[in-house]
Image 1 (cartoon, rainbow, N blue to C red):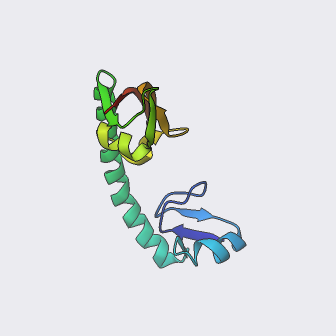
Image 2: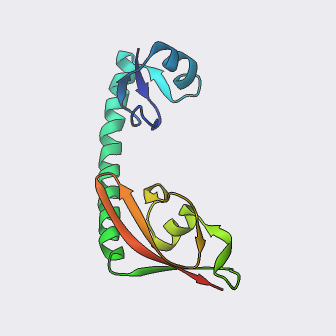
Length: 141
């Protein structure tokens, strides 16, 4: 069944994209959760217009992230948290906190697990086709 996605759906497609999915997936999951519409001519035409607009916004955002990644390569980002004498943090550093400190989108931060130790940590960043890394310094209060 062809559907027009209204939101980004992992492993399926991006918003305003026309995709072919299994009938059950469309009828039982995507359409009831308002993540997709049946791909009629009218819905497809509207989606094409929205896709053009969102692609230009996404391209501008990707360029801003790429510029920020280049700047981060030469600087160190610091986060201060409470820790015990052994250097273990009482509260983990999450991707949201790292994104706020580094001034990059949260979904660009690739974190296997939250950081729970004081010290320097290598953080991977991926946004679109751009990838990079920077050093995060976790300091005890």
